[in-house]
Image 1 (cartoon, rainbow, N blue to C red):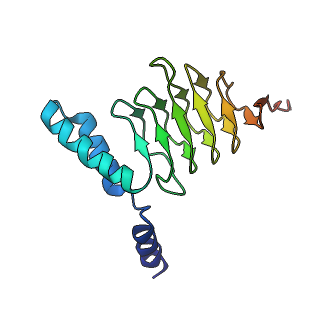
Image 2: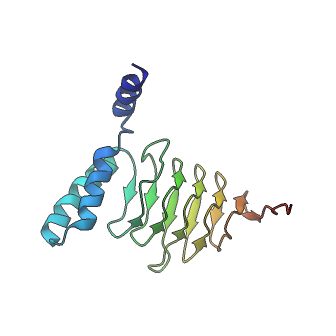
Length: 158
């Protein structure tokens, strides 16, 4: 019964993105420009209703975890996002001169974070809430505060 309740709540809040991701994948597979334009129209309408935007050329592997739905999320058409990423609300993954971030697998991007420009975010990196990132982030590092600071966790040797 709890599963049904969760599904009803997700649907009522607009967080049920299953249909959105199915259309997104179908648009990636289509070879017809007309069909891609029609799918883009519907995807943009769905995203706009949820307060978000995912650009037409964005490469997203797998389905990212969006705990708050698409609310306030902007992903540039030039961005690349690896599998297993978790993206919170009001995140901007933007472009500068047609170049956007490349985000590795298993990254966490906190609420209100801004990633812009031609940067590489390594696998397993964590971007703290409200951080503005415009430089590369090493794998497994954490970026926090304003101005952003990179914290690299040293692995203990046995």
